[in-house]
Length: 130
Length: 387
Image (tube, rainbow over all chains, first blue to last red; front, side, top):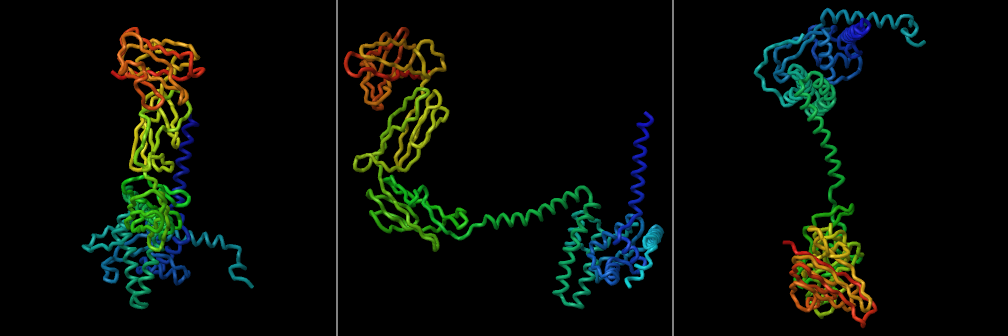
């Protein structure tokens, strides 16, 4: 009886553990978007993020891809957004500006540490081929 | 966190309304459409309207998968249903287009006369005018509407043909009619074999288990001779009693039905009786309406069959045509349409029958004399009239 009750509890805790990992882990485009938002500061809205990514990585992401990524980051609590005043150039629509949250800053640092740990011991490769 | 800024009194674009309709939230739709509008305006200034429009279209296509996924994740159940319906509709379009391409009709390539033989010839048995029906096909074999067909007499016996294909045979013989639809032409042989009369038996009698028999009818032509080339149709009204195979009829089960035959503009109806084989007419159940007793009589033989009380047709049907009937006498309290046994009533040929009203204790006596055929075979059939 005791053993029978313990099993579901273990499963539930495992499920929560998964959720925790999922909310804090970020993909490569998410990380790139997070870094770009940090770099652009107050000017970080969809179009600016897209152009900055194109300039730095050479990859031309669609508007839809950028906004779904930004919204995922917002859902994870890594970004927050505010709407600007309506602008004539956007057909009377407002821009949506994004800024980093504290969790977003921590996620960036964690990503940097992970990258550094992965690159550790690969000094020759980091310097490039001879 | 999501900014809950007050909505401005701005009219949404169609694209924005569509995105919201499929389940994306309003702020997402506004951001996506706003970015597109902003970049489009800048591209139009810098590179011209054509390139700007091309960019806009490609951007919409590239964004679609992301927007759809977003809508599925964020949309309400109702919005998801709408989105699924949109996707299904979009998927149906190319499939429909492919099917339409596959089954589209091409230009006419072949003209074939309805009911024609291998030589594209038809038989006309009609005295009155009849339409020469043609079918038009394209190269792929699709049947076309056939509107615009034109007909004209070409050769052979004189034949009245209207441009719309109404044919009137004025004398018997073969004619050639030309048919055209656009640039496609065909020649149709018309065999005029006029039928003025269709002579048929009034009824056909079978006993269960009999083999198939040719339908007993003859088509009479204008010269009073039988016409052998016929085009027509025949149908049996109740296929549980008998079935047709070409011009033959085969019994299936006891009962009564009819066969209708049409040749040209003449028709005939034949009643079909399939009798249940019984040893005698005594003790019949109420549902046994069509019964028959096979009879085999050598010279000098006589048999007596007791008859039931009631109203019925009594017939003698020889096994083979041409055999003289036996001597048949009704005995007892029975009234027939003729007093001379069964011989007074002859229809069809070779069959003998009488309509009887019988009281108790009646019988029929069937006898073969000392002369004539060595033996006689046939059936005594009884068809009880429904009360």
